[in-house]
Image 1 (cartoon, rainbow, N blue to C red):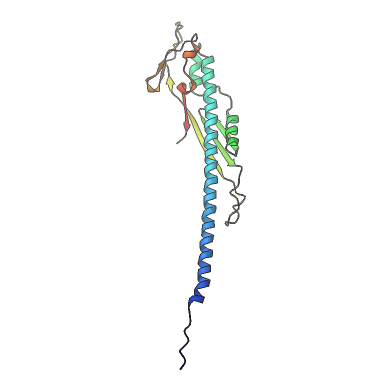
Image 2 (tube, rainbow, N blue to C red):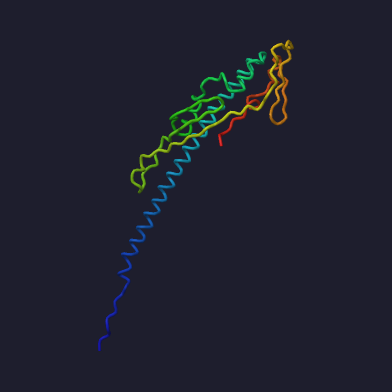
Amino acid sequence: MSRPRRFSDSGQAFPIYITVVAGLLFLAFAYLAVGQAAVNRGGAQTAADAAALAAAQEARDQLAGLWVDALSDPAKWTDIFEGKGADDPCWRAEQLAAENDARLNSCDPELLRYTVEVQTNKAVGDSVVPGTENMKSTKSATAVIESLCGFKPPGEDSTTEVLPQLNCKGGKNWEPDPDDPAGLPKPEDLFDVHLAD
């Protein structure tokens, strides 16, 4: 007497297994592409932040130099502390963008405010997501200069040769003395530079 033949399901599971593994591999590569794009965007934002800060710091240093040059003429101080008189600092933004493997697309200098846009030099690269291999990330950032000090401008009828006292944040007061350059405040004492919120 012959036994009834039993059919095995093991041969039918193999194609399903291959399909599932292929789907998982595709998802893994897709997540890798998303990760590559995120890294590329992060690099672009880092370059933009650095470029904006570099432009603002260059302008801050120029303003501090202008203040030292105009030390004996307090009538000019107000314009300087309002950001007037500095040359275009966008060349520093371009330098910092290049150091972060990006190029400067634009730099918009305003009084005490500098906005830049950069684009990464490297593309996202090959991935399973079509059309992303040549994409480059573009990001922008804004840095601002904040005057840290105030002073009481001398009156028009003032005949005193004593320079106004600088009253700066943090309770620091300066008695500027043109004969003591070493005792003058540094650029970072006069102006704060930070990224805009």
